[in-house]
Amino acid sequence: MTEEIHRRCVEVARELSPQLADAIERGGPVALTADDSRPLAERLCRSIAGQQLSVKAARSIWARVVDAAGDAPLMAFLSEPNQDMLRGCGLSGAKARALCLIAEEARAGRLEAEELRRLDHAERSRRLTALWGVGQWTADMISIFYFGEPDVWPEGDVAARKTLERLTSPRRKTLRTAARFAPYRSHLALYLWRHVDAPPV
Image (cartoon, rainbow, N blue to C red; front, side):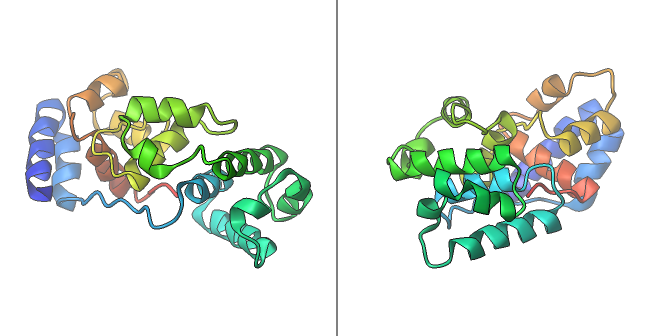
């Protein structure tokens, strides 16, 4: 199946731009592997904690958060009384608040992965972005990497969007270009991230 998707993506890319086709073909097939080994709320919190940071800085801050929680369950530790401790771990005030609000939803049973898995990407995004501090980029990353959705184009991801522009044309709308790759837009993003060697956290 991965080989089939690869061939399809190369064919579509050839119709759009030789540079894009070369970039996809040269790297070979990419596998979309979902990782839902951790609870959804934890994954969301980690994603927000690492936003706009280097991979190294994001890992370091998250390790400090986990250390600060100690033996307490993470979702219990991520609560309003502990916001100062969270800021001491290197989180901004806004990120600390977002993590606490996500944990509150999880404790109330309103962030169940299996329930969200049954939704399509648009509805899942609507539910996730209704949470304070969760934007469309985070919702896209969760759909791609947590739920393994094959057809998500992360328009808000600068690396993916700018690379697609560079390999096609800056005058062409990236949303329209990406639409040509449906139902494999997540794969297109994976090819582009690999091309610039800048996968998201």
